[in-house]
Image 1: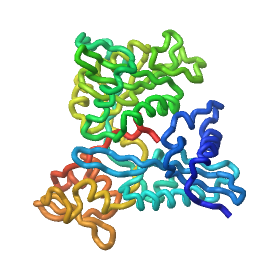
Image 2: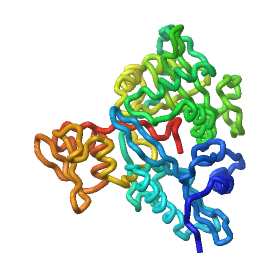
Image 3: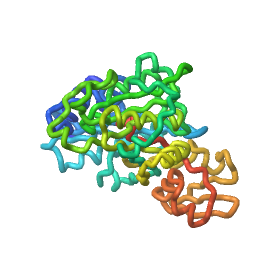
Length: 391
């Protein structure tokens, strides 16, 4: 008989051990370091399945998060590090944990779950892809044609830059709310670089008046150059690294678009990359224009992971769209008795059959529902969820 319950602080080391057994197949142990919000003591929200003897055999990490989107604040939980001991798989333990996490999040007043994954476990329970992100890819050939403005001193991050970097990170129209301490913790964790089996580097564009932009990069191990001072050494497989294409990615960026572009170009040069990819949320139009004008190849992708609407009333209330509480009475949404929705606009009322259509309407500016009826709608902007904040 399994005991499904919240994981206590003193049991978190067992969760780390289980997660590293499942995820760290190459022998490197990094889960406890890379995901401090899940595994460090505090107020634990995560759930586990325990045997009668008290052994933790299945774990689902759960972390509260608030996202600022314009003038609205969205309360949510993120799910990650989901794992089950090989000997206990096939018992639907993860499904039971997901239900407990869902009920926990609802009781806390959250509107949605952000899930780091798209397994059928989640999609069967109602999670779905969401949002719209532009992915820009810059080749070394293209970046070599970029002319430096010489307006900035591009250098590795220094400890004294921390206030300026935090201010930039919390400035975009949509961002994960992080305190200064939380941001430092996430930078030190290097989650995405470890997941990519690469190294993290951070560059800033500095001026005499402050920091104009910064960018965090995930870079293949560079055998030719010494790593800069912001790279943390950890075991990285460099077999045949010299002969393989060197592709890096931008984990996070913020600041003036022209300065950000120069940081990207400098990363390609400094770390001897063949190409570099960066995500640009749809609402960051100045950055998208800058990337396109600079010759980057741009494609459309979904946001990272999946989303599950767990309390539509809370979601519509927090986004300012709930009928009776909407900040703009010209555009509001009613929840119907059959759990469908109705979009009310000056042009008329339009049905929203289910949560999938509601998710598309709220978070995708190019949703078919809008294009079909030529409706103006205040799409809810979200940050990219597989950036510095990654659960």
